[in-house]
Image (cartoon, rainbow, N blue to C red):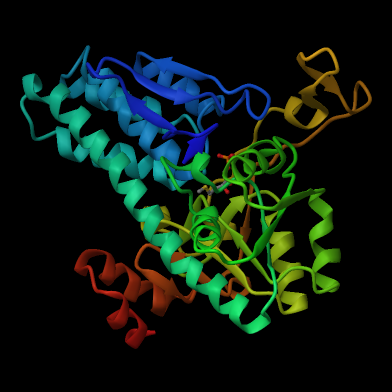
Length: 374
Ligand code: MRU
């Protein structure tokens, strides 16, 4: 996607494969700046401190982290230590494990001397695949928006939570990819953007990237969605996810579950957009089985923003001494999810449909065949 007219990805290797550049997402929306990662430790820190964030981008950064490490130490022991360290950077998004384990499986059978070059090729392949996958998600999801537009014959209002746009991936995004594709196809739409406390990925990142693309949007306080749905001001919700279980439970940014409950109560379709690497086939029950990240209390007690003097500063919101809890994610049970939008098409969030999807990922069945199977 473009930033001030210039095409960007969120992560890219330097020409000589000695470093990786990223957009520093902790500085947006007020400052657009890039950062250079030169070691596995830089990659691990960038993931942990959320300079890169969003499930697919975390996975790709993990893969590049392995490549950075292989430039210096490529023994079996170094590969294991690198993968083990990177896996600990953030616990909830399964894409991190997926990206790192794919690198490990690819590199382990190779000679030590071959590993560095191949690691960079494989990390680049994972990044390119992410772009293709998200473009396909956009294609499938935009048909849902088109169908709603045809039925309604007026602007389609879509609510999204957190940031599942191109900043959360290598390009296009997951939840926002259908929105970009539909908007580019000339469909009239408007996006309600949940601010997404405590880190405000909606207010800071989603609003910024929608604005860069010229998509009409309105930022709302997190608690507004239910009210809008009761008044018929939301036609559909589309969110991303950090991990989906084999039976279709969806883990996403804290607050997603409440939006799904409100959507269910008001008959508003609730879609979840995801690349298939976000499915954790080893888990069934999301609420019980998915590890939920708990982050620093300061993310709740403090907030940062642009001051009148042009400086970005952090200020305290809460009384000194009040404790704060910071759970990063929640789980929406499959029964509240209308459908999953994947690169292979739109499927129901249940074990039977997900099995079909699993077979499809390896068989590469086309859309018509997928439609017949639904
Ligand atoms: O804590 P974050 O900002 O990494 O959380 C991101 C989200 O919850 C996204 O909605 C999710 O990763 C889907 S991203 C395509």
